[in-house]
Image 1 (cartoon, rainbow, N blue to C red):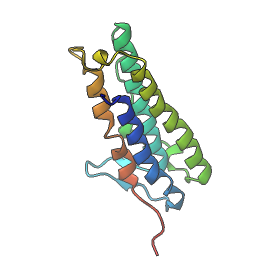
Image 2: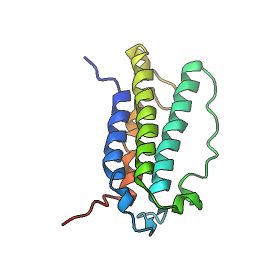
Image 3: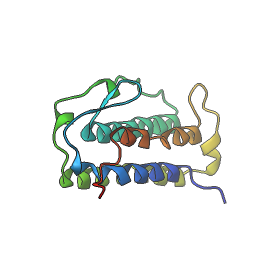
Image 4: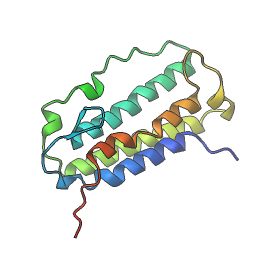
Length: 152
């Protein structure tokens, strides 16, 4: 049996959440990625959620046979004042709820489709499977903040 590619998105969310649960220990210092983008816990969660929303909207547009909405996000280029706020246990719970629901929505959406739809040519766009393969790298955002668990 072929694995539902949407389940890969759920797995990427779970890998991200393994790091996110450590972020209440954040020291308030933004992290800089290898490509010089600034990341904080709130910004990483926002980018993961925004990335999921963006591609979920793309999937729905492709399935409806309408053009996708142009990407006009500031994305990782923007670090807002809210991104700099302390990251609490409550923020972890909110991130879990938000991100798990978005990941599950991918899996459910793909499960509702005939598997032939997953690999249907949608040129100039990616196939639905390619979209989920791209989203398997979601945890890159979480890795920019990293594992902040206290080590003895």
